[in-house]
Image 1 (cartoon, rainbow, N blue to C red):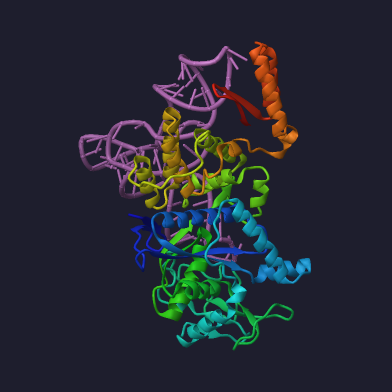
Image 2 (cartoon, rainbow, N blue to C red):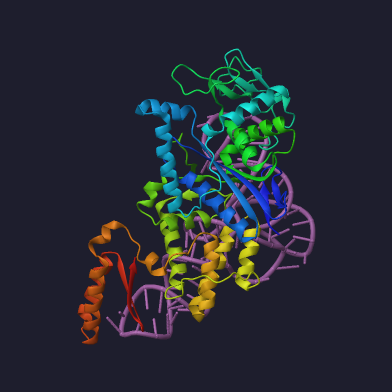
Length: 457
RNA sequence: GGCGCGAUAGCAAAGUGGUUAUGCACCGGAUUGCAAAUCCGGGUAGGUCGGUUCGACUCCGGCUCGCGCCUCCA
C-alpha cells in the first residue's frame, strides 16, 4: 500500500486517490530570473521520481509544474539587463529545460506560465472579494484577509497570533492585518501590467498556483508538492485562496522535500551559497548527480560537497560494473520477484529511495556472483524506475572529464593492443609501464579472460 | 521569542523492541604475471542522562548540540 508523509497532518498516510487509478499532481516550479541551482535540481528530480513511481504503480498521472514568469525579481533583473522581461524569462526557461533534461527529468504534462493565466487569477480574486476573503485597498492593491479564513496556519502549524507579524517586516499601512498578503499588485509606471477591475497591475505570487492548479487539475486534487521553504507562507496562502474561493478542500496530500545544504547550511539565493546545476554538470556526470539526490530520502537534508559526489560516483560505478557485458534491454517487471518486492515495499513507504537503492546493490552483488542475465534485466528495470542505469555500462564507465581527453579512445585502444603484445612476449615491464602511464591520465586497465577493457578512474 | 525537524560507525545513509541494512574507505583471504574488477570473511555504530521492558539504536521524558520556518526563497 502506497503511503506518504502528509505535511498537513504531520504523519504517514495511506494514499487514496480521489478518482481510482488517477492522480492529479501539482508542484511549485521555478521563478525564472536566473539559472537553476542544486536546490531546484532536487525538486525536479524528487517529484520526477514520484511521478515515475506513481506510473510504475499503475496510476495515470497528470503532472503540473508551473513557471513563475512575472514577479518583482524578474522585473528588476530585466531592468538591469535592459531587455524585455519576456526575453529574460524565456532564456531561463530554456536553460531550465536543458538542465532538467540532462538530469533525466521527464517533462510534466502541463507547464503553465503565470502570465498565461492572469484571467483565471482575476476571476478568482473577484470571487474571494465576493466571499468576504479579500478587499481592495486605496492604493490599488487587493489583499487577502487572513483572519477571514479560520484554519489559516494549519499546514505550517502556526497560529495567527504566534506569527508575530511586523516583527521582522515593515507593515504595509494599507493592510487591515499585518499578515494579509497581496493578491493583486498595482503597477508602478513602466512596469508590466494587466488591466483589472482595480486598475492596471500584476498578480501576487501566491494566487497563480491556486488559479492554475484548479484550472488544470480541478478545484480539489490529490497531491501538491514543493520545497520545504514553500510550506509557509506560499502553500498556506494557496490553501486560503483556493478553499476561500471554491468552498471545498483544495488538496489531500502535501509533500515537501528537504533542502540541499552546503557546510550544514541551507543552499539559497539569498545566502548566495549556491551552485548552479550547470556548474556541477561541468564536473560530474548528470546521472551521478541524480543518483546523489535519490540515495538520500527526499525529506532529509542533503549536504552537498565534492566528496559526497565522488562517493556517489563510486557507488554508481559498482552498479554499472555489474551490468557490464549484460543485455541493455529491461524485461517486463515481475513485482513478485524477491528483489522487486523489496524495492516496491521501500518505494511504497513514503518513497524510501535509500532503501530501494540498497536493493539495487544487493541485486548487483548477486549478479556478480551468478552472472545471471535475467537478474541483470531486473536491475535495469528497477533502476529505470528511478531514472537510473539506463545507459550502456561502458558508456558510463568511460565517461570522464575533458581534461583527460589527451587520450582519445583510439589512442587507448592502440596502447592496449601494444600492452597485449608486450604481455604475450612476457615483457611485463613494458606492459606495466603502459598501464601506469594510462593510470596517471585517470584511465584504468582491467584484464579478464575476455581481454582488456578500460574505464575512467 | 514562537513553532517544527534532526542527532546512527572514518564518511554517507536506511530499516528495526531481541537476529548482516546498503555504498565508499579500511583490514585479511581467493583470484591475477602484477594489478583492477569480482567473490569470501572482518572490525569499527546509534549525542547525553534517566524511565518503561525479560530485553532499547528502536518507545517515553529531561538535557546538550545542529538545522529549518516565522521575510523573497525549491
